[in-house]
Amino acid sequence: MRIGHGYDVHRLVPDRKLILGGVDIPWEKGLLGHSDADVLTHALMDALLGAAALGDIGKLFPDNDPKYSGADSIELLKEVCRIIGDRGYSICNVDCTVLAQRPKLAPHIPFMRERLAGAMGLDAEQVSVKATTEEGLGFTGEGLGIAAHAVALIDKSK
Image 1 (cartoon, helix red, strand yellow):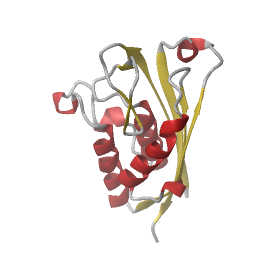
Image 2 (tube, rainbow, N blue to C red; image 1 turned 90 degrees about the vertical axis):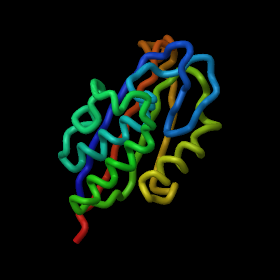
Image 3 (cartoon, rainbow, N blue to C red; image 1 turned 60 degrees about the vertical axis):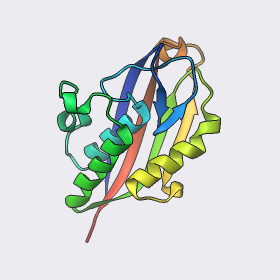
Image 4 (cartoon, rainbow, N blue to C red; image 1 turned 180 degrees about the vertical axis):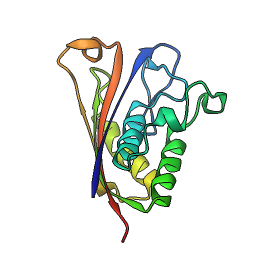
């Protein structure tokens, strides 16, 4: 068994969609990035790649490659899962935390779990997603951005 940790952060800006865990969340701002800027899915991909000692998403999907401009992070997650699967790993479970002062994410979490689980070929019970504020502190607390942490446990197929 191997464990990996992932972290990502993106700035909030007007005129962008807010996509978290593959779910389009109605809100006045969205996350700025080369792809869809889905911080939750990005952190999760980094956790999976880290567990398999395969680097990070910047190595696989460079932000200077026009092919990934506006990319759907759920599709990138499927590719990460294919890559680690080809190396004999299976995903046991993942645990993710989104740090955002606003909007309130609790109503969207079940959909995020289902979407991420589907992309990884898992049951939703193997995917934990939590959200927290930072009590108005720091860049996430001030509403300047959203961050996410993820931990993934993978196992080498026998």
